[in-house]
Every structure is written in C-alpha cells, then in structure tokens.
Image (cartoon, rainbow, N blue to C red; front, side, top):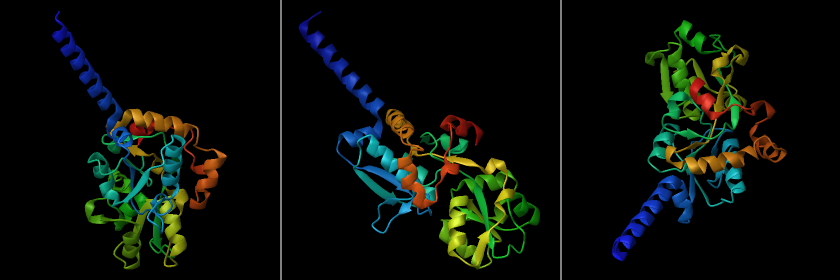
Length: 280
C-alpha cells in the first residue's frame, strides 16, 4: 500500500470519527462546545415555570433544571418564553435546547421529546365559578352535564378530555391560564381544567373562582413532569439525569422550590420516564 493511500485512509478515518463524535454529541453539546448559551424554553405558567421581573427563568421546574445544569458546571443560561403549544415544535426546530414549565411525560409527547427522569408528580384540578353552581369536580361531570370546559392549547388536559368523550364543541382551548380565568369570569366556560398547581394559585388570586373537590379527580389524571430534550441529545440527557439523581429531593432542592409550593408530596419517587411514556 502506498504512503499516499495510507494517508488518505487515515484522513478518511479521522473525518469519519469526527463526524461520528459530532453526531453522538448532539446539537446541545455542540452549542456548549461553541460557547453558546443553553436556551431554556417555557411558557408563563404559575409556579411551574415563568419569567421573573427580569425575564429570567423562575418557577420550580426551572429551578430544578437550572440547578441541575449548575451541578454539571453549566451556567451560561438563556431564558426563552413562548406559548405552551409552541414549546415542543420549538424544541424540535432548535429554537430551544430544553423545555421545562411543567411538561408532563405522556406517551404522545414521548414520540417527539426525550424526557429526563421525572422531577415532579402532580394531578389535574377543576376551577369553577365561586360556589360551584353546576357541581363540576372532574372530567366526567363536564361530560355528563354537557358543560363547556376551557383549558390550554397543548395541555395534557386536552388529551384527557377527549379520552373521556368530551367533544370539540364542549372543549375550549386558549393560550394559557389568564385566558382560562377570563373565560370563566365571562361565563363563556363552565369549568377550567388544568394542573393543580396552576388551579390552586389562580383560585387564591381571584375571589370569583374556586377549586372543585379535588378528591373526585380520577387517579389516572395524576402525572409526572420531566425536563424535555431533543432525541438527538441522548448523551447530554444521560449526564443531566446523573446530576439530577444527586439533586432531586435533597434539602438543598427542597429549600429552593419551597417558595413555589413544591413539597415532599410532589416528589416523583422511583417513577421512570420510560414508565410514564408507556403508561400515561
């Protein structure tokens, strides 16, 4: 074999190895290696994930994500706020590098998103006008009464409502919590169904609405939230999960998220993302 051929093969092998390494690293690691920011995408969702007065990432899922990244030595963070329904499309289009804000791990979402180990356990809840005049406490009550339910576009509650048979004529979808409250107050909807964290927060802020009887919500409405990554970022996700395992549930974390009403009851236990993908 000639020296020129040998050099050509070595160069080709090096190029192949470099390409394979780049593919293995994924677009997020490529951004980090290039000195660019890690873009955290989230919507304006009370307690879960929202921008603070300076536009920085706040809320307990953002706290967990940011602190876990810090454990990995990564602090060059950029908060990017968008509509809830645009978070997954934005992640896939590389407008965000990870998404937070209370993203439940659902089988339908797992097709498009690779989730971290769960960071929170929570259920849905019903918001109704004060006094609950139509006695609506769960999805079944909406269906049997022929009531109008409002929720957020892209929320897990859309899928849940359709699961029990609520049709589009009785399902109003709006951008987020502010619009849900407005629909209730204006009488355009009889009930809003959203996460318990959001519902409780909104009920405390508005005298005209209240929580339904949360004990009557079905057990299947309990879900597990994770941090969402692109499928191409598996290596980074593995490192994130390793750092998260050393942080989740620690005294340090619980003190950090306490201001957002996250308590020990919201810890996900030993539930895995794979289980949630297969069972939710």
